[in-house]
Length: 508
Image (cartoon, rainbow, N blue to C red; front, top):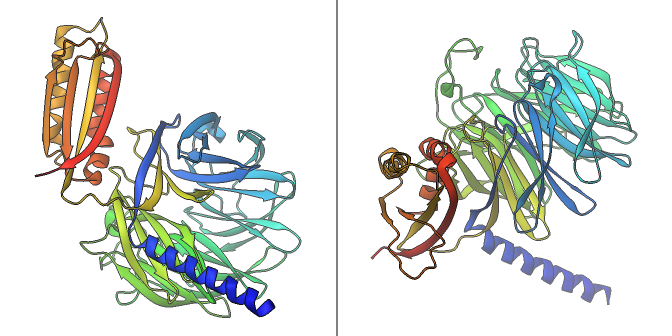
């Protein structure tokens, strides 16, 4: 009987793996909602599930915005919370449970401090702790946080970009307060100068932490002990053959079967001005790519594979890598890019080989603000931008691509102007809307006209603008394009109502 039960379970699992494999090859992102933020921009996004409710935390300059995320992808604003000194940005954020309480830990980048907020029953926040930088810690220009749960306590590991960089460990108390345990100062061997990414793995009961060194172009592995102390295991620097670590940036990891991997992206220093901010200006641009490292039994990183950027991928300026789904055989990753202004979906197989699936050109730069979150059987990505003119947060559903061969996309915008709008104002609005085709190349055709219906069902809408795109990428680029954002801001005061519809049609 046990043999038959085990055999049946293996068959069910095998079939589920086949279904998963079939569905990952054509995954795509579909925008579900757009909401405004109250902060100046969106730099970091994290999420948290508490008592069956799903919350999104978007941090930028000056504030953290809290949203509820529903199963259909709808975002509902809940509250706004000011950062210490009303500065920031909230560059690194991580939510976790410590005992019976739930906390959001925030790295206040230019406030040179770590803020701890208690997550209330409705997702709102209450600040319970504030730790400022000292000569003994490395909290100046704090960027990245990682909570690690050990046998008898939990610890918060902190890294950043300060002038005296390093890695710090703080014990987290049940009330959310932090106590400094130890700080390891950066040196010429380890890669902790500008820690922008961290990830931890457990191997046979031992815990290891992996860090990226943005300024010193490499990755390091550390053993974490039960008392929160740190020991360096190994360090790998950038080269021009089997890794891309110049400006090592996001770090994540996954376990596939018996194999443990660490995946590292980079925003190459070529995307910054040489000198000043970049400490080592004598670099050579050798392309963009995502590097995969295998973790050996001692927790050390071993170079394994690189997916190089080409004309079929969008990997320039990687700032965030999120694990979307994972089984024992493969994982789906989402890579947010600042310079390609895209989200690239990748597949990592059990052998540690990365391959591209699909990408969506979002139309806005992603600056660490990307988060994967699952509700029931639906996977979402929540994205934001560091652009000060955008002030939006966007939810995307990840599902198999709906094939639209030989089709084009129509985007219809119907406008109703206020009675107080003058003829001159309306004329300027018409010309500004028509001029979008000159500002946004992705608009392959634009036409507009005045309502001529005599049926009485127009609901006082007077103008219809029809924009045509070759694909969904064009629509996203248009939607978040600076010219479109400026148009909305300029004509918004004279608009009484707007009605938008999109549809696909044959291009023949």
